[in-house]
Amino acid sequence: MGNNYMKFGIIGVNPESKLATKEELIDLLNKHRGILTKVILDYLNSLIELEFSVVRTNINKEEREILSELELYKKIATYNIYHRALQLLEQQKYPLDIDNNERLEISMQVENRKVELFSFDYQERISLRKDIPDEYKCMRIGTISLYRSLQNQDIREKEINRILRKLESLYASHNPYPHRYSVVGGPDFYWERQHKERIEKLEDKLAELDSKRELTEVDKKEIELTNDIHQLLLTDYGLTNEDFEERKMTKFTSAEMDRMNKTLVKKLPNLIVVDQIHYL
Image (cartoon, rainbow, N blue to C red; front, side, top):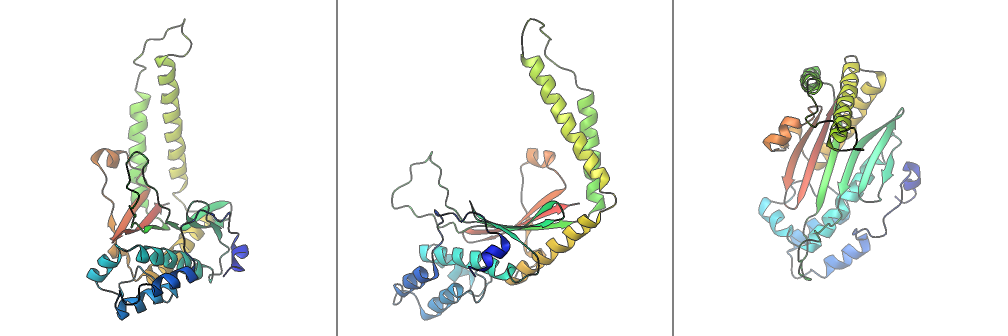
Protein backbone atom coordinates (compact mmCIF):
# COMPACT_ATOMS: atom_id res chain seq x y z
CA MET A 1 0.00 0.00 0.00
CA GLY A 2 2.91 2.30 0.70
CA ASN A 3 3.76 2.73 -2.99
CA ASN A 4 0.26 3.99 -3.70
CA TYR A 5 0.58 6.92 -1.29
CA MET A 6 2.59 8.84 -3.88
CA LYS A 7 -0.11 8.12 -6.44
CA PHE A 8 -2.67 9.95 -4.33
CA GLY A 9 -0.33 12.61 -2.95
CA ILE A 10 -0.41 11.85 0.77
CA ILE A 11 0.48 14.97 2.73
CA GLY A 12 2.63 15.00 5.87
CA VAL A 13 2.04 11.81 7.83
CA ASN A 14 1.71 12.82 11.47
CA PRO A 15 4.51 11.25 13.57
CA GLU A 16 2.36 11.69 16.70
CA SER A 17 -0.35 9.45 15.26
CA LYS A 18 -1.94 7.04 17.73
CA LEU A 19 -2.31 4.44 14.99
CA ALA A 20 -0.73 1.09 15.86
CA THR A 21 1.01 -1.09 13.27
CA LYS A 22 -0.31 -4.48 12.19
CA GLU A 23 2.60 -6.21 13.95
CA GLU A 24 1.89 -4.37 17.20
CA LEU A 25 -1.78 -5.32 17.06
CA ILE A 26 -1.06 -9.01 16.42
CA ASP A 27 1.37 -9.06 19.34
CA LEU A 28 -1.22 -7.36 21.55
CA LEU A 29 -3.90 -9.80 20.44
CA ASN A 30 -1.66 -12.77 21.29
CA LYS A 31 -1.35 -11.44 24.84
CA HIS A 32 -5.14 -11.71 25.20
CA ARG A 33 -5.28 -15.39 24.30
CA GLY A 34 -6.72 -17.23 27.26
CA ILE A 35 -8.63 -14.09 28.28
CA LEU A 36 -10.94 -13.65 25.28
CA THR A 37 -12.99 -16.41 23.65
CA LYS A 38 -11.84 -17.95 20.38
CA VAL A 39 -14.83 -16.42 18.57
CA ILE A 40 -13.86 -12.91 19.68
CA LEU A 41 -10.16 -13.53 18.98
CA ASP A 42 -11.01 -14.66 15.44
CA TYR A 43 -13.25 -11.62 14.98
CA LEU A 44 -10.50 -9.23 16.11
CA ASN A 45 -7.92 -10.97 13.94
CA SER A 46 -10.24 -10.56 10.93
CA LEU A 47 -10.43 -6.83 11.66
CA ILE A 48 -6.63 -6.60 11.70
CA GLU A 49 -6.47 -8.49 8.39
CA LEU A 50 -9.01 -6.01 6.95
CA GLU A 51 -11.38 -8.80 5.93
CA PHE A 52 -14.39 -6.57 6.69
CA SER A 53 -15.19 -3.23 8.31
CA VAL A 54 -15.51 -2.88 12.07
CA VAL A 55 -18.67 -0.85 11.45
CA ARG A 56 -20.45 -3.99 10.21
CA THR A 57 -22.59 -5.88 12.74
CA ASN A 58 -20.57 -9.11 12.61
CA ILE A 59 -20.99 -9.49 16.38
CA ASN A 60 -24.04 -8.91 18.53
CA LYS A 61 -24.80 -5.65 20.31
CA GLU A 62 -23.78 -6.92 23.76
CA GLU A 63 -20.42 -8.21 22.51
CA ARG A 64 -19.71 -4.92 20.74
CA GLU A 65 -20.55 -2.88 23.84
CA ILE A 66 -18.25 -5.01 26.02
CA LEU A 67 -15.42 -4.88 23.49
CA SER A 68 -15.78 -1.12 23.07
CA GLU A 69 -14.57 -0.66 26.65
CA LEU A 70 -11.23 -2.35 25.87
CA GLU A 71 -8.22 -0.38 24.67
CA LEU A 72 -7.32 -3.42 22.52
CA TYR A 73 -10.56 -3.01 20.57
CA LYS A 74 -10.05 0.72 20.19
CA LYS A 75 -6.60 0.22 18.65
CA ILE A 76 -7.82 -2.50 16.30
CA ALA A 77 -10.97 -0.60 15.32
CA THR A 78 -8.98 2.55 14.54
CA TYR A 79 -6.51 0.58 12.43
CA ASN A 80 -9.36 -1.16 10.60
CA ILE A 81 -11.30 2.01 9.76
CA TYR A 82 -8.19 3.88 8.62
CA HIS A 83 -6.72 1.18 6.38
CA ARG A 84 -9.99 -0.11 4.93
CA ALA A 85 -10.80 3.41 3.74
CA LEU A 86 -7.41 3.66 2.04
CA GLN A 87 -7.66 0.13 0.67
CA LEU A 88 -11.14 0.71 -0.72
CA LEU A 89 -10.59 4.15 -2.22
CA GLU A 90 -7.16 3.49 -3.71
CA GLN A 91 -8.81 0.90 -5.96
CA GLN A 92 -10.96 3.59 -7.59
CA LYS A 93 -10.07 5.25 -10.89
CA TYR A 94 -10.29 8.76 -9.45
CA PRO A 95 -7.10 10.71 -8.54
CA LEU A 96 -7.45 11.42 -4.83
CA ASP A 97 -5.70 13.71 -2.36
CA ILE A 98 -4.93 12.18 1.04
CA ASP A 99 -4.10 14.39 4.01
CA ASN A 100 -3.08 12.93 7.36
CA ASN A 101 -1.75 15.96 9.20
CA GLU A 102 -4.39 15.98 11.96
CA ARG A 103 -6.79 13.26 10.82
CA LEU A 104 -7.27 11.12 7.73
CA GLU A 105 -8.94 13.27 5.06
CA ILE A 106 -9.60 12.11 1.51
CA SER A 107 -10.74 14.54 -1.16
CA MET A 108 -10.50 15.11 -4.91
CA GLN A 109 -10.31 17.98 -7.36
CA VAL A 110 -13.29 18.41 -9.65
CA GLU A 111 -12.04 21.02 -12.12
CA ASN A 112 -10.91 23.85 -9.79
CA ARG A 113 -13.10 22.70 -6.89
CA LYS A 114 -11.95 20.67 -3.87
CA VAL A 115 -14.57 18.06 -3.01
CA GLU A 116 -14.45 16.17 0.30
CA LEU A 117 -15.16 12.45 0.20
CA PHE A 118 -14.15 10.93 3.55
CA SER A 119 -12.56 11.84 6.86
CA PHE A 120 -11.71 9.93 10.01
CA ASP A 121 -10.91 11.88 13.16
CA TYR A 122 -9.13 9.38 15.40
CA GLN A 123 -6.91 11.64 17.51
CA GLU A 124 -7.39 11.71 21.27
CA ARG A 125 -8.28 15.15 22.55
CA ILE A 126 -8.71 15.59 26.30
CA SER A 127 -9.69 18.95 27.73
CA LEU A 128 -6.85 20.60 29.64
CA ARG A 129 -9.40 22.22 31.93
CA LYS A 130 -10.18 18.92 33.57
CA ASP A 131 -8.12 16.95 36.04
CA ILE A 132 -7.62 13.63 34.25
CA PRO A 133 -6.26 10.73 36.33
CA ASP A 134 -3.02 9.23 35.00
CA GLU A 135 -4.66 5.84 34.56
CA TYR A 136 -7.54 7.28 32.53
CA LYS A 137 -7.97 5.68 29.11
CA CYS A 138 -10.24 7.31 26.55
CA MET A 139 -12.12 4.58 24.70
CA ARG A 140 -13.46 6.92 22.01
CA ILE A 141 -12.58 5.38 18.65
CA GLY A 142 -13.37 8.52 16.68
CA THR A 143 -15.72 10.00 14.10
CA ILE A 144 -16.10 8.82 10.52
CA SER A 145 -17.48 11.47 8.14
CA LEU A 146 -18.92 10.64 4.73
CA TYR A 147 -19.74 13.38 2.22
CA ARG A 148 -22.18 13.68 -0.66
CA SER A 149 -23.68 16.46 -2.77
CA LEU A 150 -27.30 16.50 -3.91
CA GLN A 151 -29.56 18.75 -5.92
CA ASN A 152 -32.71 19.96 -4.16
CA GLN A 153 -34.52 22.92 -5.70
CA ASP A 154 -37.10 23.12 -2.90
CA ILE A 155 -34.43 23.45 -0.20
CA ARG A 156 -32.56 26.02 -2.29
CA GLU A 157 -35.69 28.17 -2.73
CA LYS A 158 -36.39 28.02 1.01
CA GLU A 159 -32.81 29.12 1.74
CA ILE A 160 -33.10 31.96 -0.78
CA ASN A 161 -36.30 33.16 0.92
CA ARG A 162 -34.65 32.92 4.36
CA ILE A 163 -31.72 35.05 3.20
CA LEU A 164 -34.03 37.58 1.53
CA ARG A 165 -35.96 38.00 4.81
CA LYS A 166 -32.70 38.37 6.73
CA LEU A 167 -31.40 40.96 4.27
CA GLU A 168 -34.66 42.90 4.42
CA SER A 169 -34.30 43.08 8.19
CA LEU A 170 -30.66 44.16 7.97
CA TYR A 171 -31.40 46.84 5.35
CA ALA A 172 -34.02 48.31 7.69
CA SER A 173 -31.72 48.29 10.75
CA HIS A 174 -30.28 51.54 12.07
CA ASN A 175 -27.13 52.07 14.10
CA PRO A 176 -28.24 52.21 17.76
CA TYR A 177 -25.07 54.06 18.81
CA PRO A 178 -24.67 57.85 18.43
CA HIS A 179 -21.89 58.95 16.08
CA ARG A 180 -19.05 60.68 17.95
CA TYR A 181 -16.90 62.73 15.58
CA SER A 182 -14.15 63.27 18.13
CA VAL A 183 -13.66 59.54 18.82
CA VAL A 184 -11.69 57.21 16.56
CA GLY A 185 -13.49 53.87 16.38
CA GLY A 186 -16.10 53.34 19.08
CA PRO A 187 -19.24 51.17 19.18
CA ASP A 188 -20.95 53.06 16.34
CA PHE A 189 -18.00 52.40 14.00
CA TYR A 190 -17.80 48.69 14.87
CA TRP A 191 -21.57 48.26 14.50
CA GLU A 192 -21.44 49.79 10.99
CA ARG A 193 -18.52 47.57 9.98
CA GLN A 194 -20.11 44.37 11.27
CA HIS A 195 -23.47 45.33 9.77
CA LYS A 196 -21.85 45.86 6.36
CA GLU A 197 -19.95 42.57 6.56
CA ARG A 198 -23.12 40.60 7.41
CA ILE A 199 -24.98 42.15 4.49
CA GLU A 200 -22.13 41.47 2.03
CA LYS A 201 -21.83 37.86 3.20
CA LEU A 202 -25.57 37.24 2.72
CA GLU A 203 -25.62 39.00 -0.65
CA ASP A 204 -22.74 36.78 -1.84
CA LYS A 205 -24.56 33.69 -0.61
CA LEU A 206 -27.77 34.81 -2.33
CA ALA A 207 -25.93 35.32 -5.63
CA GLU A 208 -24.34 31.86 -5.33
CA LEU A 209 -27.71 30.18 -4.66
CA ASP A 210 -29.36 32.05 -7.51
CA SER A 211 -26.63 30.90 -9.89
CA LYS A 212 -27.44 27.25 -9.08
CA ARG A 213 -30.92 27.32 -10.61
CA GLU A 214 -29.21 25.56 -13.51
CA LEU A 215 -26.44 23.16 -12.47
CA THR A 216 -23.11 23.37 -14.27
CA GLU A 217 -21.29 20.33 -15.64
CA VAL A 218 -18.90 20.61 -12.68
CA ASP A 219 -21.86 20.52 -10.27
CA LYS A 220 -23.24 17.42 -11.98
CA LYS A 221 -19.86 15.72 -11.87
CA GLU A 222 -19.49 16.52 -8.17
CA ILE A 223 -22.91 14.99 -7.45
CA GLU A 224 -22.12 11.85 -9.43
CA LEU A 225 -18.68 11.25 -7.94
CA THR A 226 -19.56 11.98 -4.31
CA ASN A 227 -22.59 9.73 -4.45
CA ASP A 228 -20.57 6.90 -6.03
CA ILE A 229 -17.97 7.05 -3.25
CA HIS A 230 -20.65 7.55 -0.58
CA GLN A 231 -22.50 4.41 -1.68
CA LEU A 232 -19.24 2.45 -1.89
CA LEU A 233 -18.43 3.27 1.73
CA LEU A 234 -21.97 2.67 2.97
CA THR A 235 -21.95 -0.77 1.36
CA ASP A 236 -18.60 -1.55 2.98
CA TYR A 237 -20.03 -0.54 6.36
CA GLY A 238 -23.21 -2.54 5.86
CA LEU A 239 -25.30 0.61 6.27
CA THR A 240 -28.06 2.30 4.29
CA ASN A 241 -29.25 5.92 4.24
CA GLU A 242 -32.16 4.87 6.47
CA ASP A 243 -29.73 3.93 9.29
CA PHE A 244 -28.93 7.61 9.88
CA GLU A 245 -30.94 10.20 11.78
CA GLU A 246 -30.72 13.97 11.69
CA ARG A 247 -28.47 15.51 14.29
CA LYS A 248 -30.53 17.32 16.89
CA MET A 249 -29.78 21.02 17.18
CA THR A 250 -30.81 23.57 19.76
CA LYS A 251 -33.73 25.81 18.80
CA PHE A 252 -31.43 28.82 18.36
CA THR A 253 -28.93 26.93 16.23
CA SER A 254 -31.65 25.48 14.01
CA ALA A 255 -33.08 28.94 13.34
CA GLU A 256 -29.72 30.19 12.03
CA MET A 257 -28.70 26.96 10.30
CA ASP A 258 -27.75 27.01 6.63
CA ARG A 259 -30.33 24.76 4.99
CA MET A 260 -27.93 23.89 2.20
CA ASN A 261 -26.04 21.57 4.54
CA LYS A 262 -27.49 18.70 6.55
CA THR A 263 -25.80 16.42 9.10
CA LEU A 264 -27.06 12.90 9.75
CA VAL A 265 -25.55 10.56 12.33
CA LYS A 266 -25.32 6.88 13.13
CA LYS A 267 -24.09 6.17 16.66
CA LEU A 268 -22.19 3.03 17.63
CA PRO A 269 -20.41 2.28 20.94
CA ASN A 270 -17.59 4.88 21.18
CA LEU A 271 -17.85 5.52 17.42
CA ILE A 272 -19.94 7.91 15.33
CA VAL A 273 -20.54 7.75 11.59
CA VAL A 274 -21.62 11.12 10.14
CA ASP A 275 -23.31 11.69 6.80
CA GLN A 276 -22.57 15.22 5.59
CA ILE A 277 -24.97 16.32 2.84
CA HIS A 278 -24.35 19.43 0.78
CA TYR A 279 -27.23 20.64 -1.39
CA LEU A 280 -26.45 22.42 -4.65
